[in-house]
Image (cartoon, rainbow over all chains, first blue to last red; front, side, top):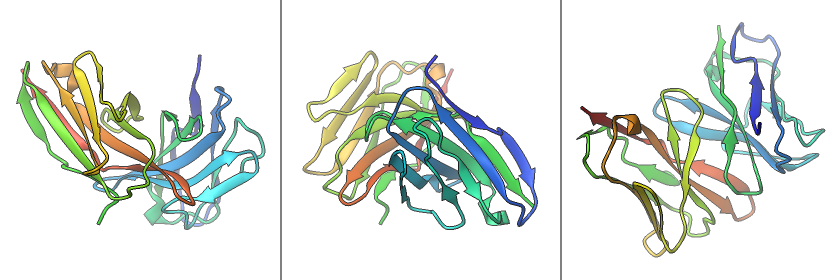
Length: 111
Length: 111
């Protein structure tokens, strides 16, 4: 089954404690991206990757890191989370600028 | 000015009604256009791509007007199950390769 998986689905953590949210796709898509969704602001792109070892900033990259060592995986790293990073996060993959397929989302709370 | 703008709604309509949403975008270099559907805090799912010639999928019709930089979605014979938030998405390919989401239009179909 074609899918995008994210883990964990829910996470409560404290300020400053490094965390990683994993994202994996099995559709051999070149393009992957991370979004955060906040009430009234919609989905905003954090980072995207056009292929292995090629990443670029989206609209809200501050406080986040990503890596793309393999085509299927695109983890999101928060080195020192802060409360303003409390949000709903989605990973997505697609053929280049084609239809995006989203993971189920990760609800992150930073205390 | 936001790059992609939508009326947030909510649009409350009776079952069987026809409802239309518009979305405007500011970047004339936008390449691809989509409508996604999102149920409460779940992952967005593709409703339909939008082509220059307009396209239809069952009760749903999408139109693109490049000259005026807007896209539209028409839903005929609304069903209760159409209640959701509809997201307008455009892609940019001018130095960056991003997906830009509107904040969504909320639809409630009433029995």
